[in-house]
Length: 84
Image (cartoon, rainbow, N blue to C red; front, side, top):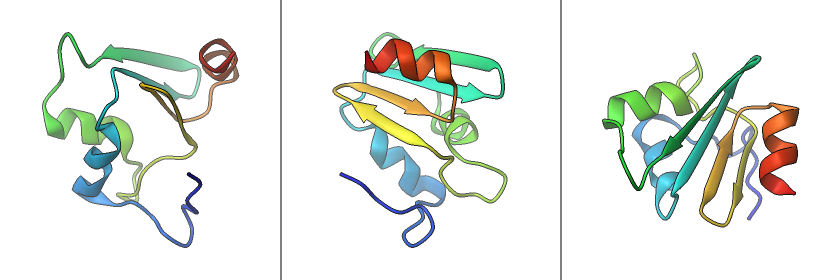
């Protein structure tokens, strides 16, 4: 599924819905990356929202889902490793 972040932004708590069925969450912020195994330990919703949303309160881009993996933010290394 492709959704335009400009025309149909995902805002606030609605962003938590994209985590349904996700086991591994990868978040890229600049050169830093974070991997969360949501099956072992799921952080509180406010912590997850802090990772998923940008300063505008909208879902950060890009967001790529591959099976049970979700990648948020741009990092060439993560994208290459997790989508290969």
